Length: 276
Length: 295
Image (cartoon, each protein chain N blue to C red):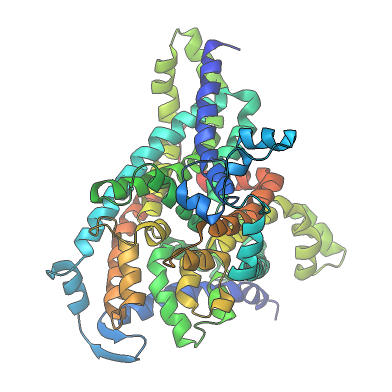
């Protein structure tokens, strides 16, 4: 009985996480090789047909949505780096007001994405139909992504900055290094892991963007904002009989995101910053 | 204050205005009449709160501008969104889901984290690695697979269907295990000598010493549950079960949406978390640092 106890403690968590990750992925792997109509309950073995259709068929939107997602992700990445890190550096200097600024900049992270999307839908409309033309709609969505992610990542950068021993800066000052030099030779190298973490998490997060697209554009205009998560959603739940195809798409998305997960795991396995 | 610090302050204040603007827009629009919003959806301040109007009001003069709905109470949109949109129902649903998910997830994660942190058993490290490996799969990828599971279990459009996948999480186990590992073993031994079993040690020694981690995880879970959108959107078709997020998207998709009412509902949906955040900020920020630094 005694040796059984630990397994009883972990059993519930395992039951839930195993079913809703491993079993689920297994079921979807099987579904992805079927022509699968979830609502009618009919299915027919298809082999790799769903994958072939996604990757090579003329009417496939996979590459289009992958390209849109990659553009969106790149814009978010650049935007987050250009806002979160400078904000963290500035916030550090605004000593007395630091807590107040952190609170205000953090607001989007604690607001439901649906509400942010609804508000920005109108703000972008007031600014001049940003969501109505094909070449401005995706950048507009990325702007919302950056706006809502800046404060969160600023907090992460603040934590990273606070880990750098102040003696380093004092020593550099004595040696006559200016602010730019200090930033280049102390802050950037010692913040490297935080930087990589923020970059990878931003990429992984933005590759999954769904809510703002669903609420604000519905993939339009002219499919300019059709991203992968939205394509999967539409095929799985809005079009009948495409559940197998949607499962194949989900696996392709996983393959893309997995590359970035691997990069992140590599970096955190070797997390030694001070002995370089 | 040096020149550099002053400049930093100015930039941060400008940035803060950019952050607050959408909230001000939401709040201002929620006080407009439908006609007012249709005619001027750009202005931040509704006609009734324009400085001129307030001054005229104070002097007891009749309003200079004849804006529509002059005799209309400012909270009308809030009342109407509840009366006609059943927003109270959606808010209650969101609250119930968030409380249930937070409660159950905390309880189950505590049990598992305790076993992984304070017990020895064959296969422990392997099982822990297996559990952590589930964090690799992002939620967007799991949407369709999880739907297939819920459908095979016959739980589509039920309370269980919404809640079950969120009842445990590898991240929570990981976070609590770290906290439990920090508790000195001598305390545990002392409790054992006093006749405590492992269950008693968990509740009387380990948990009281891990309050910050528990609060952090509780807040994260609550927020995640309150904000969840895609999953309930997929699992639910019965409107009676909609959480606020899905309800709002449903209203906004109507052809003749009553936007000021939707904004009123949005204010009510955003306010609880903002209030919660103001009171529990340090736990959240600490949790982000933990997740961000993997220390």
